Image (cartoon, rainbow, N blue to C red; front, side, top):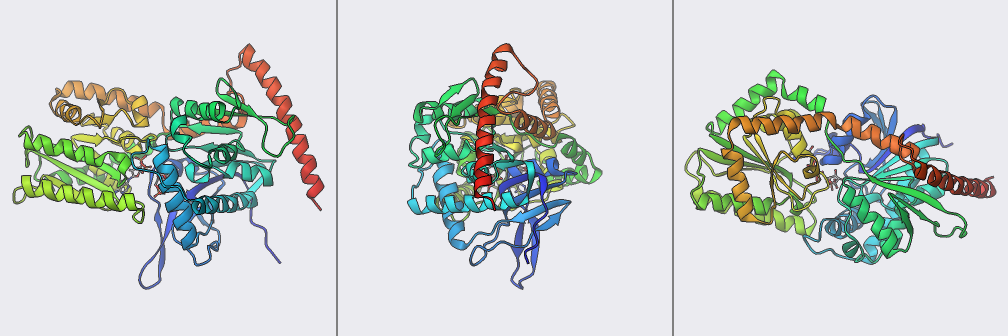
Length: 514
Ligand code: ADP
Ligand code: F6P
């Protein structure tokens, strides 16, 4: 007898579960918080909700069989198993060696393999089936990120009754780059199975709508696309909304954490253990070529060379989170970064005062907060980044109005954090000047900037992001609460088409039912 799984009105699906399974040499397994911005953002949003989370548990199983569901902090976790081959082809291959470079301006060359695509399709299908199993009738399903772009249409085919949203945590590429993908049509049709597609920036939503219009000849109007789903008759039309809702951080939670006596004391301890530098600069990134760590180190090295700065007065702490270590581009990046750090330290450090403190580790949240509080200048210099939550976390921790944020104009965060010290990471001379400006700007001006930055993050926190997203999903393809006469007419037309479509799919499921 099969026991059916419990079902939930809200189901979140992402490549990773919020926790990773780690098995030590003795075979004892423990759970560790998963890396990356997606989990950081979704954790506070899920607190107190009765919901399920479908995702991979961070470890392979021989035949890709699923682990048993379990509950963490009240959230029902439904693992999707991956075999070693699926990990290699769906996650490391298609997600992170094909899509990731294309979606990040081809900073490194993308690799195309038909086998990877087939595995990506299969794994997306398994995610869709797992979601279908735990979603309550008429429930809401929120799918995340580029690893699951086929899932919306696959899920709709199994469960036409649920409302489906998708949010992209990374940029969406311009038509010219997206066009390189041999599977471009299937990817767009996969996404269009959703009711609402959320993006970090208006430019990302615009890129997606342009892909629909220019590449696939679909009709777009304002922030919606109307199309005939493949396989349906030509009168079956659906309208999907694609719009920007920028993600954020848990301002209240992080702010409170950074005010605790333990974190304050730890921040002072960090500074003391570094010899109380006049200026402590900090970089915190997953070790990813999109983060601009190479460019940052080059600028720093040149400042040392030019004798504009010198340890022990000025020093840099670079925290790098291990990431995607089996993908070639990441392996090469690690070698290069560690070689550069070694060279800079060999040249510019003195005994007891290194020029760069390099830490290749993951840390608990209170330690991260202490580092942010300890740093005088935070360097966030990605070449391309969907948002960059580190920038917002730094600002959130600076309740003392201390510190200065150097921010790349290629991070999604730039669109909101205009009072940061803005730089173009490709312009090494510009980065050097911006760092010097961040160091030398008078304290009252730095405080004024930090106050404005904090106000922005405080009023646009992750809880607001989630509620706006869920509202947009509930009312898609229409905008929530802002009716105009034109959108009213559009709404009525699209409502008619969607109702007709729903009737058709209800009839179809009755025909195949028992
Ligand atoms: P991405 O999603 O590309 O990794 P983000 O900056 O948006 O980039 O999010 C990264 C998240 O991971 C942030 O919440 C940050 O605090 C966290 N993080 C980064 N480095 C570390 C680390 N070494 N240890 C623990 N958490 C980290
Ligand atoms: O935001 C992009 C993303 O791939 C997320 O899905 C994830 O949170 C983060 O980067 C870390 O990546 P990975 O899950 O590949 O370690």
